[in-house]
Length: 428
Ligand code: 2M8
Image 1 (spheres, protein in one colour):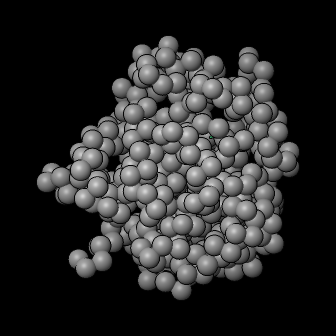
Image 2 (cartoon, helix red, strand yellow; image 1 turned 90 degrees about the vertical axis):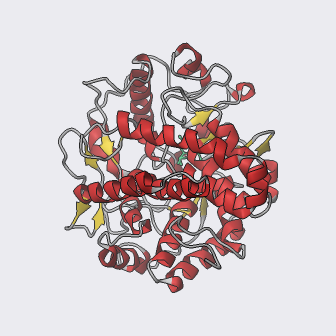
């Protein structure tokens, strides 16, 4: 709670006070899932602040900027110039990209923590239409491959920025943005722990192109369109949460259950039998990337039989936990590109291990869920709540006092850790 207290800023929690000084979209949802055990009211405010930054087209932005910290993170508000874009809100400045849609799940979890308080604040009533519009944005504007899956337009949208899943598509992206690339991140984390300068040149180039098209998704020649299994899984889980929310509001839940089932069905196009995981695919060519990553294990979260036995075997087998890893590595440990300290190319992250603990519980493996939860707690305490760790030694990497690490530890230590929104509540 000490970490979340010091990272709290009036209406939201920053991921880390130095490296990430603004509000990040999927971070806030993870943070709310832990914060709800201590202060359901503040967890609700966290999500309210994010939802208030929603664009007219429904998107929930990747970052809501703190105008006082615009020199401390790049690219910032001055880069995005969001108020000049018609669909963006006037009252706050935001990035134009998005992040994985775990928000409806978080809203439901916060409601369940204290339904009376939530009802008093009409929390579900206010959040529901915004969440519906958010999912509708993803369905209508981001199904760029035309097969029922959401595409990301930038690696930052995946939350797993330099995952090998994006390497091939990024290799074709120019690395010469007009704006000089400021590496403000390197003041807070080691150069060997962050994406390279070449990656950053390409990140900025792609972000410039998206911004220069007013973040309008109708750009036919857009050079980066990838379908990510984690993004699409979280959307399906959030549709299931919307079904619970609709039900609580006396509205029909069927459209959300149907949509969750459709996404789960569409995920089959990302199944990679030769690797025993789902993988990302290029929405234009439909080619699947040949890399086994933590993203590809995520469909295990869904309450359907999506190759669950094989996914569980991959998760516990020699390429992931069976390698001796303490938490789930972000990349297959036998992949030639595996690096235990390089950001999303090998290290273990607390949010993805937490998601897979929820998944293990759902699939009748409480032993595995407990193993992951116990390891999360001790590794977070040992490393002063690190951003990520070396999966074999547990050594802390990136920044420390990282908010989602702290929040998810609070969640697993609570009497009622978060479950997937399909699980009945105790007593039901
Ligand atoms: C990391 O991403 C940001 C860009 O969004 C960055 O590297 O500057 C990722 O780990 C992402 O998942 C996370 O939301 C963000 C803030 O914690 O940091």
